[in-house]
Length: 292
Image (cartoon, rainbow, N blue to C red):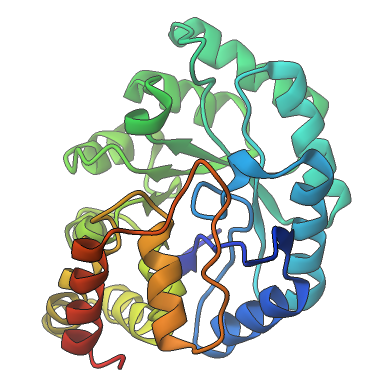
């Protein structure tokens, strides 16, 4: 259902408020550069600092500006099942094509609790769901067996963004869920190996800054041209690393300000601007990638 380069969009702020014109411009640039879908209001979009009204206003703006040109996968997870149900209903009302949903964080439910959480969500809303496994942030980890149980039990659970960093899980999940289950990398630096093992794309931080190159990389992978994909991966690798050289999305917003002068780099607390070493790493990586 979802393939290719899918940016996890940053959220631009000016003077503390959502910069709607800047966001609409970002959406257009991403689509014109070859991005195959968009993710508003994920981790990179500073969703944790948005009010509920802001969150789904931003989703509506993304849907409106995309205008059917690419699908929109709205961030909608919560550690409270009732809130998660409200979020996915709001995402559907806003016009999103799917929801990206983490397992409950902080509470740390067992695998039965994770299954029941999504069972309740699916019962309340038929919007397609892309699971998001990022235990480095949520602490909670989807077991492969739980992913398979969800995929086989609920047709609306169509795929997963895997940010575990455990590359062998691509094959394990492919065996458990079937080859039609959509597997998207959540780590730019692992996307080459991820695709070679059966992945079909990446929900990407780097694509915010280098959308055309990330799209070309994914196109090469889909064509089986791994020599060309490796060449692009080598150009982008330092940038993949530099964008996580300080707390995200500080470095990626700084990079956007370099690539698109005038783009607002403002962050909401508790996120702060990247330090000097991080900025230097981003600057060097942008030169290596040929982006500045």
